[in-house]
Length: 274
Image (cartoon, rainbow, N blue to C red; front, side, top):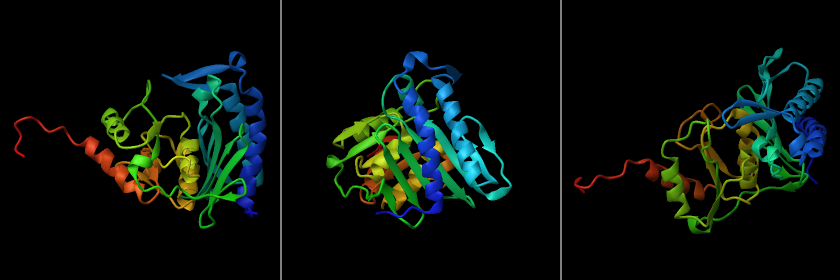
């Protein structure tokens, strides 16, 4: 049986308390109180209540830690070396439409490095968690990324552009290029779950652009501790800042990166020298 550290226990207890409200409101689409933050960007009363529960539980357990919250933004703490990065409901659009695919995401950042992460699916009772150097787990079962090494066998997740959100200008070409080479592409609507599904070997890879830190922080450490590789999709060095993520096992990662790079190259013009 996996032994959870004090930090993971704190995160798990907060997620389980938060999950009660999400599970209660799931499917109550007509009764949800919804407001709009921007084009195709919604927040429900459930988001706000869930975030408050997480804030209160984490603050009680670790007084002084700062926060980076999806709805409330950055909250400085007396302890400047630690902060929680929290998404109370990753997959809000799914939640609003009664699609049962969403999650709670909590990460701990220590001295600028993500050291622990937990993603909890309250409907399937699946808790994905990891801590730096201690491995990744689903509930109490150790996780490993898939061992597939051929693109033709791979199932890849992505996040497609939607109204009001900036997109990589070559995304449509990338989608076409990847789709032509892999067994399948999925767009499920929760980046946090996409990442932990890579860690669990359910997906063989993921690429997506312009995600927020709270979308990916927990998933990054979980994939890495499951033996996977997570980088910026464009080979940059500020993954949390850009939100441009590419995750896969170590054999598929460079193959997917090559497909994306190939799609980024300008199409050759007729008459160019070969």
